[in-house]
Image (cartoon, rainbow, N blue to C red; front, side, top):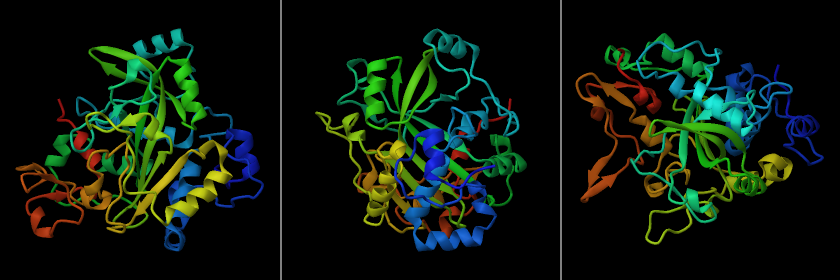
Amino acid sequence: MRRAISITVLSTLAGLAQAQDTNTFDCSHFLQFGGDINKTRQVFVQSPETLAWNWFVCLNQPAASGSPNREWETMKPSDQVYLVNGAKPAPYATPVPPPDAVLAQAKTLGLDPSRTFHNLNATQQVDGMILEMGGAVPPAEKGKPVRFQLLMGEGTFDYIVQRQVYNMNGQAALTSNLEFPSLAWELKAAWLWVGADTDYKQALEKDGYYIAQAYYLQDGKYQVGYAALSGLHVINKLNPDWVWTTFENRNNSKYTVTNAIPPTPMTNTTGPTTAAKPVNNQFQAQYAGLSQYELIGVQSKTDPTLLANSQLESAFQSQSSCFACHDTAAYSAKKGYFNFAMKEQGGIVYPTAPPPDSAFVGYNKLDFVWSLKRAQWQR
């Protein structure tokens, strides 16, 4: 059973709080909106930023009493949903252990086998570019990419399995638009690779980064070690057009750089929004363990018009709209996936407003869920 967020409880279990005042937001069944979605919608209207922060705190509480993992780390990674052979994935609650080669390296490094190992299997952003690490990172990591990971909640997973769209065969067979349930959640995480460098790990911990165990496959060999959470998209279907929230570590400009020559520190040009700033101050003061993370903003439909995470939409922040981009999620058995990259003035631009319905003739809409693009043909 989940708990109300109590300062004393979280301080004991996770070191997330030091303030004397108590946040009474109830984390019990927060992924189900406390069993009352209409009430949660009313709370959202009152202060979207406060609700976003409360979700972030709930996601970062221990997954269970005594667990070394956080709640969000129990969500299903996309690589365990969209399998390389297009097969039906294992049930949501069925753990999928890392490859034996990863566990063998982890044992040598003294990592904790009871903690989650995150498979950081992506480096390309939406525009096909990478975000490079730089600045204060160790020389061996300079120029290497920030890595990414997609995760989904049980409501999202169950619907994908029910509609059999975990592979391309199922998507090609669609005869109508998808409509995910209101309890659908998705997360997208950005990570700085640490590896086994203990000095670098300590520096990142001092700057308030959450450090997790992770691995990735490169040139046929697994890299195993630690990674630091630099950004997190948190989205759910509280509203029919979804709710989009995004968080970053405030020290990202020390460790990530632009693609300019010479590189300059990577910053966020879309936020924190004016509405997010006072709420950031409130929660950062209240939760010491999360105090170096900040809410960049909350987007509902096209308000605000732009919202980006510097770690996830680095080079195209001036054209980044979560709602408008994901509104184009669509598939056609004849045309493939809808191309939201628009040619304009000799270059490529991305939508900041939803295209007209006429643009999707012949397509089935995927209800804002672009992670479906990771599906493979069954073989």
